[in-house]
Amino acid sequence: MATFHVGAVSVTEVVETDMPVPVSLAFHGLDGEAHLIDTLRDRYPAGLFTPGGDPLLVFRSHVLRTPSSVIVLDTCWGNHKERLLDPYAHRLDTPYLDRLAATGTDPAEVDYVFCTHLHQDHVGWNTRLVDGAWVPTFPNAVYLFVAAEYEHFRSVPAGSHGHDSFADSVAPVVAAGRHRLVEPGFAIDETVRILPLPGHTPGHSGLHVTSGSQEAVFTGDLFHVPHQFARPGWHIVSEHDARQATETRRDVLARYADTRVRIVPAHFALPAGGHLESRPDGYAYVPA
Image (cartoon, rainbow, N blue to C red):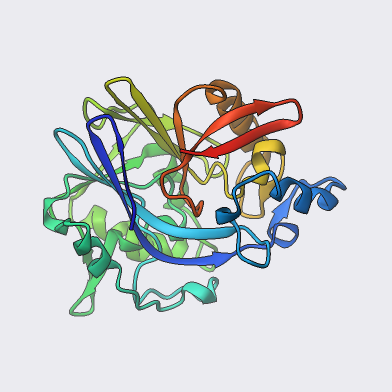
């Protein structure tokens, strides 16, 4: 569990689980450059990788406490969920709620839940199993879904990724009347707004936090591995629109490099994120 601050906003991670991801197997778009995987890895902090050299993907939530709101960003895989297409996440039984409590967070005090997108590893703890039924984990929160994202995933056919997780982790929130559909740019409060980062999914978005003179951008799944700072065209196999996602990565790199804006990818093994620095052969990622 790690905590950092963006001005008056405190941010605490809640880790559910983690797993290594071999770049050569999980990514497309390498275009004959797979030989650069190790070379690119060596320019980034060792803490982002397993001892064997694979990037480590961490599945976590971030709890943001602003002057006026408690916001949970992304909700991981969830417990007891049928995930036959993702056997490493099938019927998990993790102490996520205990870890959330260890941060001093009561689910009943959460004002907003925001999912950067509706992939199954970002919505799972939207709900929990009570007496055989899925109920909102955060009973008093407003769950914010980007409208384009919601419309896409509500039509995913049975047997495809996203169908089961929509049924058990999104639809029950809607049935309970706890959701709100919003557009990119929506201001959650005076310090946090939704930032459109399309491509990974149709409505994929992040959060832009501004407090005093400090800024942070939570980029969701825009970047899965640090190699993508130098090779934004490398994309994970689950990318919905690889061309759009690549353009979005390039835009973020150009916009925030050499600034003091903290960049916080969802899955990096550096919970406090880092800063982007431009280099002649790409971008460096320096821990914040």
